[in-house]
Length: 170
Ligand SMILES: CCCCCCCCCCCCCCCC(=O)SCCNC(=O)CCNC(=O)[C@H](O)C(C)(C)COP(=O)(O)OP(=O)(O)OC[C@H]1O[C@@H](n2cnc3c(N)ncnc32)[C@H](O)[C@@H]1OP(=O)(O)O
Image (cartoon, rainbow, N blue to C red; front, top):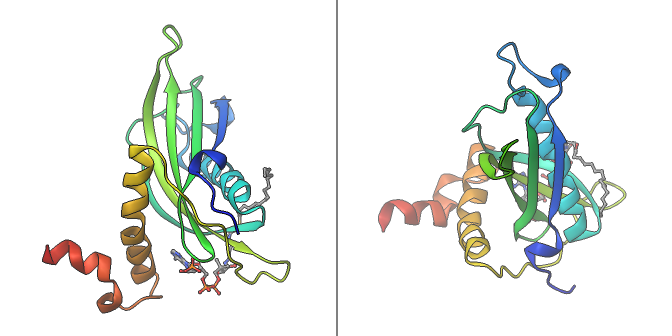
């Protein structure tokens, strides 16, 4: 299977925040943002693997800035690292300033997707070759995040999480 670059998987969704999607503070409802990020991430995972993909876990979400009603929101998702059958998808969320058009970072999230065959069994995905400095940083830290996610899910013993242990012994 031929390796791919993160830019080959990039998925960008730009949409408005409408009244039915807000909370009582008139900001985008958190669950609505999670769903939009899941959609963008699933397209990125699909573009990388060209397989059926499912969300295996949401590893990290930071709601750093509220997103007001009427905002133009851009969600950019791309594969940051692949393992055997799983892919880490890094998602950046931007709000566009109405007057200047300048985009300011509002949130970010990290999802894990798994490619599956027609019977739902995990199947191998192409490797990834990070190109930019940011892509390389995200790639390098992804194994640590995977181990943390597996430990929290009870799928890995803490003493097997070599990358996590290294954080505390360096
Ligand atoms: C192309 C352009 C147009 C595109 C056009 C759009 C098309 C778009 C199609 C629509 C697509 C919609 C997709 C929406 C996304 C859903 O809405 S999917 C619905 C929500 N998700 C689900 O229902 C998934 C349910 N869970 C499962 O099916 C199974 O648990 C899984 C995820 C397949 C894993 O199966 P398993 O038996 O645990 O398999 P296992 O071998 O242990 O693990 C497989 C891999 O997952 C990893 N893993 C498992 N759990 C975790 C965890 N908690 N944390 C991190 N990694 C984990 C393992 O480490 C392993 O990784 P590798 O080392 O192989 O890389």
